[in-house]
Image (cartoon, rainbow, N blue to C red; front, top):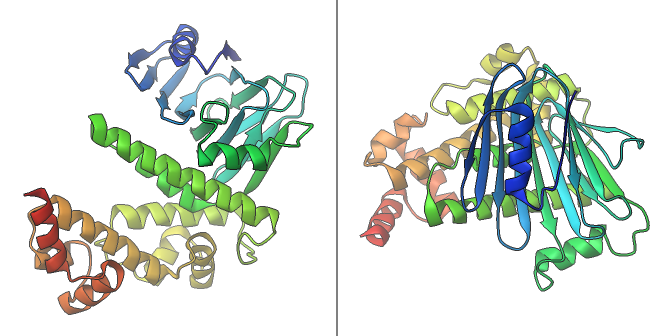
Amino acid sequence: MITIESKVNDLYSFFDTLQSKVGGTLEKGTTECQLKIKNSLANGSIRSIILEDGITVLEFDIIANENIEITIDALLAAHVNFMYCSKGKISHNFDKNGTTNSIDAFQTSIVANIKSDQNIIQIEKDVETVATLISVNTQISQNSQWSSSLKEAFIADKTDDYLYIGSYNLKIAESIKQLQSIHQEGLVRELLTKGIVNVILALEIDHHNKDIKNLEMEPTSLTKMEINSIATLTEYINEFPDLDHKVENLSDRVGLSAAKLQEGFKFQHGLTVCEYIRSVRLTKSEDLIVNTDLNISEIVYSVGFTSRSYFSKIFKERYDCTPSDYKKNKLAVSA
């Protein structure tokens, strides 16, 4: 067991402690720290991001060769923590003698410390773990809409520590992947990061509210393994939108029936398989219009559409203008 005790409020000290315990190469920036580890104890990385309004992001992408226990100090009735596991699982408890709660892949959770001044995060050995913790300090920005709403929902009038573990949600996993794939630097990176983190927080809160009302999604018979298969296909379609994704081919790829496949996509995305593929292709086409010199015909076929007229029709339905006009507008803005 690797035990790490530190204050996340002082991220530089927190990462110094991490490095002293597990080794690795530590990179420190003004708003980000990242510890890259490749040794006998673990392989992967741990990253933090500091944003405005008292928001801190802590990301784990790691395979540990020993169980890791990280104790993070928390201010009472101040922090609301959103934990999401994209892969593997993590565990949480408020103190060493308390109840341990597991958060599985694609599950969301919300934690607020009311009487316990610690959060203990546990990462199991030999399990690839990808997890994100977004912490909002509601005392830093008293006038922030985020802070006041979160304080009212998860802290005010509470007499005991608050812990919510929700149902599965793949949309949050997709937004977290966007957060992890930001490659820009400087102000652009900061703005993109802030925007995506706000989206993740909105998704987390919306999912919580629907769970509490027991209206989170249509009833489903999907097992955890089947939900994992839907996540695998989601990632596959996002990475290769240009391929001919017939439903029967996708079914064969993960061993699910066509009916289960449709149920899974409706459950996780609110779309049929074909609707989801079309949405991914449209998003990719918009990115290519903005960031490449490809002409419209080249873009149409590079994202998997076979008809330019059909592409123009559905593009206009989403963006309220033709692809050509969209490209002209973007060029005019950047000129």
